Image 1 (cartoon, one colour):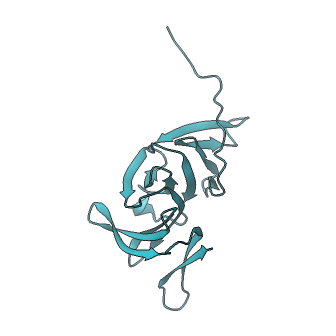
Image 2 (cartoon, one colour):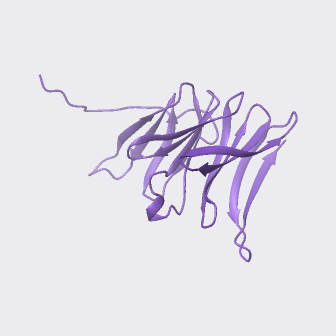
Image 3 (cartoon, helix red, strand yellow):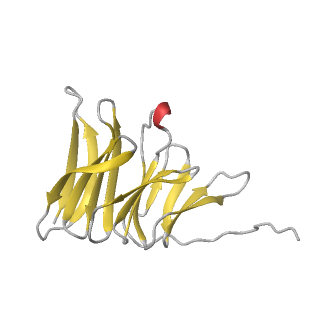
Length: 174
């Protein structure tokens, strides 16, 4: 018996950071415990072209990593979930790394490629902390934790400083 998929439907999770539109023209959105990859220009229509599985609870935040150098294109997407993890993805193949360290759900993620430091990742959680991660060999390690006491992280954004080339993280809290 031959089967084929005629139609796939998925709803986007109702969290503020659950969707991002990549430079590749694809839309990445949280759909329950997964990430749906939507191509709005698929042939003459639109279609969910891939579904990425790697979380065990609701996905809260999805970010496409911008300006990925050609040599580093194995990680190009980052997500955070109520399971307390952040997953770094190859959006074509699936999970590459799972970052564990938060005691509650990850609600914010941000990532940047930096010439000197490589891939830097920031995660904000309902446990009132922000964690900074970097690659150490073939693993990612948390190298700094910012304790927000009882505060909540609403947004994270990395930027590169123009003169020094250093990286700055902006964090919006309550």
